[in-house]
Image (cartoon, rainbow, N blue to C red; front, top):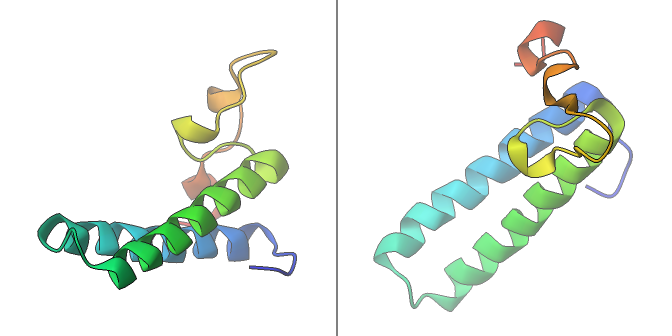
Length: 87
């Protein structure tokens, strides 16, 4: 995810990275000592976190982990993801 993405592309990338990370987390539940699986999980979890951070900075938070509540509670004052046709 090195190149700039528009809102829809970034949202889709978050879904892709999230799926890969969550799927590998399920695998690791039954194979906790697989170093390749752990490396794969860490790679996609980092990509997911970075994409969520980028999305939150540009368009607002998608989940509570990326809420910036320093000046006001912005979580409820932005359009929801499904209001823009990106869901």
